Image (cartoon, rainbow, N blue to C red; front, side, top):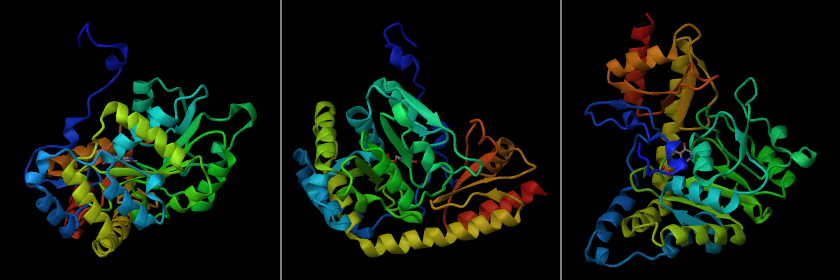
Length: 356
Ligand code: PMP
């Protein structure tokens, strides 16, 4: 801590390095990475780009990537914004679209970066409790007279619960809040949800954010994107240009395009993860866990008689890492990333042993 730091920095905590440990032979089921590698076509494209071309600055507009995303989702390139991971896309969206007089609204149990961005950018917010089944209640996001929100954001499926909101409810929320921007963070949507991107045409206040980190297994490349009305995209571009005119490097653009275009690899690997998730949920249930229905590449589960912190510590001793949140209401849950079948079997066997 330094006298030279601004007040904002004093309130910030560094990212927990324990979540990315540098140990070999770990069964790493804590940060929702995809267990299978990215598209071989993406790797080949990155290799090809790793050449003399790196001498040159990348395209500041990442037009090839935007065109590939637009073609994949049936929208116009001017409805697409691309950034360095969806975390950066979200950061720009908070600054560009969510800083208003009235508070931003999001669920109390949700992606932990939302309150962090609010702190960084001085955005007022109010959190809304999940219901008794850890679901987001759509009615909580419909305006109640003068208490209309200054913006709404939540992940769908939600993180870390994995619970999905049907598209019809998303549309009710977007249609019911024409006075503000509604951001749907679809980091995990490809593992069982239905994207809200087709709604963008009908609602100028909807921004849908996705990432290549999860279902396209490119967490290490840092590519995220948003789809929305061109006015929203222009606001994001203005903020981006003020921070860094080149958010995406040449390797990210080349790899991102190839990954978006490799539909076969995408479908095959995401289907494999969904099948493993459903097995894992059943196995955990048979061990006595309560498992929330998941539409993501992780499951959220608690054991009625065993402390989640102790279970996580016991697993760690066996070189298996899962995520445990010390947050009210969910401190007895473990969030377990869906790994390969072998990794999930190792996890289930370790838990069986611990629970004996
Ligand atoms: N949104 C949610 C809900 C997430 O869980 C994550 C991953 N931690 C992100 C966004 C950011 O992912 P990335 O920056 O890798 O695209």
